[in-house]
Amino acid sequence: MIGNGEDPRLVLDRLIAERGENYADLSRLLNRNPAYIQQFIKRGTPRKLDEEDRRVLARYFGVSEEMLGGRVQPSPGAPARSRSLPAIVAVPRLALRASAGAGTLDDDERAAGVMAFDANWLRHIGVRPQRVSIIRVDGESMAPTLSDGDEIMVDHDDGAERLRDGVYVLRLDGVLMVKRVALGPRRGAISVLSDNAHYPDWTDIDPALVDIVGRVVWTGRRLV
Image (cartoon, rainbow, N blue to C red; front, side):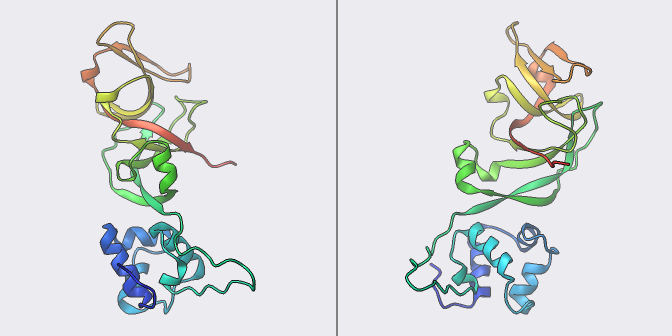
């Protein structure tokens, strides 16, 4: 149990330990250098958290900003602020791309940062926060559904054992790609399809030839 009145550095360090987080990922969540949180906790630099950093961390851990060093000063007659805020979770962005083009060989699954999502929203769409990741789309074979540079959320719990019609990240002939999967009409066969008619399809193939990484459950893109 973490109470009020404690040193915010101790509070934050305990929250990190209890949730199994690490300093570097939380620093990236704040768009800071990877050593930022460790320096704050271990060296006292900065002396206190920036207001925006404190707000993000409070939401991430579902605690009040007061517990991380903030001061709540409600205006006269205003109701007191809640001490519990909606929790957000950091979903890892993997250092690879799922080809929606000619196909790229890419086995690098290191985390290359994180994206923050509301934990309740993730539960609402039926995914476990610890079993999703963000991958970037590379190419135009899934246009207009997905475009080059889109970020997609992949549910790694939703794999081959639950396979049904939908958009998946998969490996075919060693190539990581994002494609539409359609079940037969021929029993025991699937088709791997491109939404863009200018790109090839693989029809009526043996599912054993396809390694399903996970189902695509969300996409985001930059407007230019």
